[in-house]
Length: 191
Image (cartoon, rainbow, N blue to C red; front, side, top):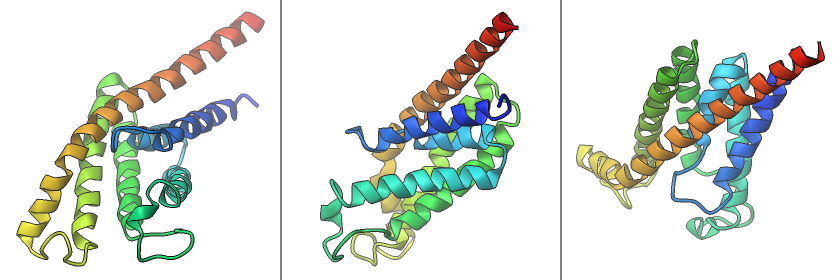
């Protein structure tokens, strides 16, 4: 049972952090990057981390796309299970897990902060590239200028994504360290 405890704690922290996508928040100020990096550091395998974070993203996107964001899908009837943007969100998750597995082999304050910064930038670059690529020429022209316009339009979201990433990444990693320390202290007291 002791070997499963850290995984259970990690999973519960990720599930709790996923709720930040569902409560009213500043755009992109969520724990998405934090749970992705946390999963990369503590869930043991890249595949498991990718699967769990993509599952969280799919479930929360399903809820959001069929409730408060439903007005963005005017051409689709019925429930929204999938949309173009989700491909680029998934690609950013995969990239962030890879970055986290590399940068967080040793979990330190510096590595946590650096990986949160890099994750924010990677998410911004991939998802805004996706916004440019999948807009079918409606919002951005299909050239370098249009791509730059997509990045400029996304810049305000980069700022809130960065601050959300920093805050939630440190909170999640800190809570995990605190809970593990409490468990270790209790184990020593009971021994």
